Every structure is written in C-alpha cells, then in structure tokens.
Length: 313
Image (cartoon, rainbow, N blue to C red; front, top):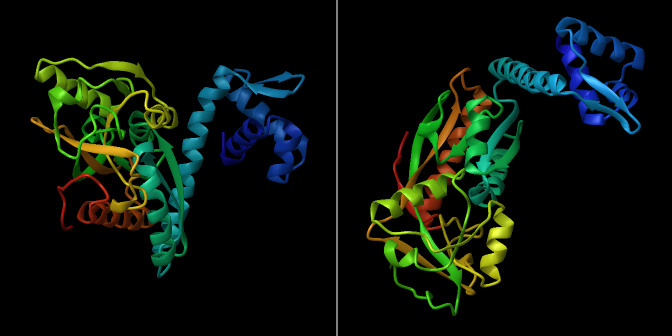
C-alpha cells in the first residue's frame, strides 16, 4: 500500500467509475485498476462492486477509505508544514471545523482576515452539529475547530475562549414577547422546537432544566438548523439557543424577540481545539490565533451573547 494506491481508491470513490478516476489522476485506466487490485490483494477483500451506473464502494472499501482520507490529509499537512517552515510566511490549506450556529458569523470573518494577513494560507470550512465538529477534531480530520464540548474530546487539546449565554428566541407578538430577561422556569413553559440530545446545546439545557425540577414544553424536535429556524420564523414555536448575530449587534431582525435566560443562567463554554495526535502546523497556529481574535471581538462588540474566558495569550 502506498500513496498512489490510496489516491486511486479515493478517486474511484469520488468519480464513481474507473475511467473518470483515471482521467482525474491523469493516468491510464489499466494502471489505476492495478492500484485497486493491489489493495484488494493486500487486504484480501473486494473494495468496489461494478453496477450498471459505474462502481459502488463495499463496506470494506468504506472502512479503508476513511483511513485513506486521513492518511492523505496528514501527508498534505506534513508537506505544507515543512514547506512553511522553510518559507518566510506560512503556506498551505487549513481545515477548520465550525458548528452550524457559529459558522455564519465566523467563516466569512475568518476567511477574510486570513486572506488579508496570510495570503498563502487557504481555509476549508467543515460545518456540522456540535457532535460532528468535535468528532472531526478528535479524529484528526480537521486541524483546528470551534467546539462547545471540548471536555468530551479524548484526543484533542483545547483553549477555553468564551462562555456563551442561552436565550429564548421567538417571533414578535407571541405571548412570550418581551425585552426583559426570562427565568429558566418561565422559558421552558413556552412551546419549543429544539435539537435532540446529540447536540451539546440540548444536553446543557436538559441538565439545567432537571436541576430546577422543571420540564420542557417540547412541541417538536428538529436537528436541521434551517428547519428549526424556519419553524420559529413561521411562529409555530420558540427556541432556546445561543445567539451569534451574523451581521453584528444591530442585525437581529425586528421580527424576533430575544430574552436572555436568568435564574439560573444557562451557559456553555466554547473552546478552540485541535488534534493531540500531531503538532499544530504553522498555518494552523496562525488560523487559531485569528479565530481567537475574532471570537474575542464578537463578545466585546456584543455580536455574541456571552463573556470572555481568555483575554490575552
């Protein structure tokens, strides 16, 4: 098994056919076929099945594919790190994991700031729910990430950056509409649409609700951020969430009320995390520092409801 074999495996999976994969890699098809055959002989298992529409990867192929993607990514990181160490400025691509609820704010600011300060660094953003962003850090598929569940990650190092506050959010005109803070016991009486317990935000909320002896008035559970926000937009329910305003403090639509939850406050710690399995590359360290500054400024400007934990590094 070598890099050529693994690149061929990934290309066949991406393109869905041997001919298209060979064209993508700029090699002849018989050579690509030999790469796959070599892997199948080494692992004594079939990696692809031929179908009328091309080829489909087998369960064994999928298992090897996950390793291949990580191996090739780590090789690219190592290559970029060595190149960067020999240059006056950092060079390479950095994969950044961001939760859905924060990506709309952080991603454009991060890409713009890195482009301006480190023009030879490119950013690839991976979005997901909190469990997914934590997983890609824990497994090393991303070099740096913003995670709300850093303590749950077994193979990552992290710096706590801020503590965000949860708010009751809903359409104006609802009975819950007010400019005043709301107690947790009153907030959970509102009809709510929330993500399920695979989400860090829901687990934090459930723990606090249990602690005060209350229960959620859960109208429905939805993990899709767009569907959840659409239901709130339509006036079907309220939600309890963090609040990161994509366009800044003044950008929140006048159609919504936002009430910070108090007595007790519901908060969670947001950290910057990276895989413990390898040293942070120079480009990734630069991106980490830029992200840190963006997150700190978001709190100072009032764009992110919360308070700073880290103020200087």
